[in-house]
Amino acid sequence: MPLDLFQKLIPFIHYTGLIHLQGWGEPLLNPDIYEMIRISKEKTKCVGLTTNGTLLNEDTIRRLLDNNVDIVGISLAGATASSHNSLRPGSDFDMILSNLRLLSRIKEKQNSRAPAIHLAYIMLKSNIHELEQIVQIAQSVGVAQIVASNLSLIVEPKLYGEALFNNTDTTDRYYELLEKTKEYACRNDIVFSYGRADLNRHSMWCSENVGRACVVNVDGEVSPCVFTNPILKTDRWFDNRLLPLKNASFGNIREETLSEIWHKKEYVKFRNFFNTAAPNISEKLLSSVPEPCIHCYKRLLG
View 1: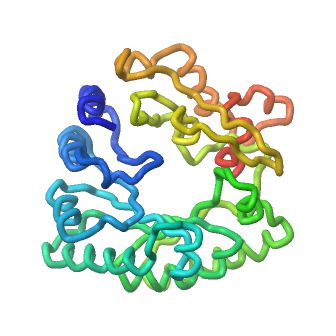
View 2: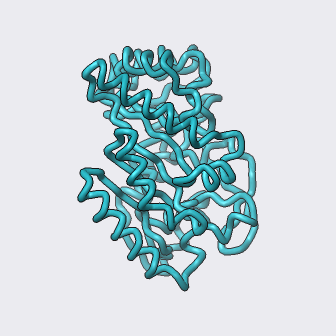
């Protein structure tokens, strides 16, 4: 997102408690990211971003600390170089760990508790056995939190079988392993949180917090979440079927203010559906689920 577009959000930043500077790209590639952090910190309580970790070096780390960023998430797709690198081509697992150690040392040298670092671990059939190792890695690089999430947007057929919830015969084993990892992490003063390993077909709870949050993409389009972002032009695999990804934009901040978009009748109706619906709804009411959310695993994993 260019800085001039971001600046259109300034009058509204103070209404939120968290600005997370992340989309579908690498935020540290944006030359204006530090200015965006500075502006956000002046207007709100908490500012975070999620990075693949490859661009963390002494300069970028010091600039993040100088601008008082609160949260930095590091995306990992495995606890070994072979598993992570195979799933994230172009990424270097060993480099990421080295960069995390550097971040920990600089924080310690500056006697800074911020930013809080968490590992964003994508759980897959092929790497679920490495959970205990990711706890050990967190210890070694000074990370106090791990967030283990599911593969919820499946764009390649070969990844369909990687999703935990598509391996129903091993669901109990997954939960046993997740609870064991949580206990192991707790004993080592690390917070380990995880998403469910099976689907709830009647769920109306979405971890994207679509009833109270929004996403503004690089073009200024305002959507309920990253999965409804119009910049995503792809199909998705859902229940072993290839279906079009349904986008949802309620307006563009180049043409309207964020407040005007937020209070549009159709957007209010969308949010109210999730804000007022029970956590689990009947089969009859499933027909009233907003179209972009019908075939979305984020809802079914709630």
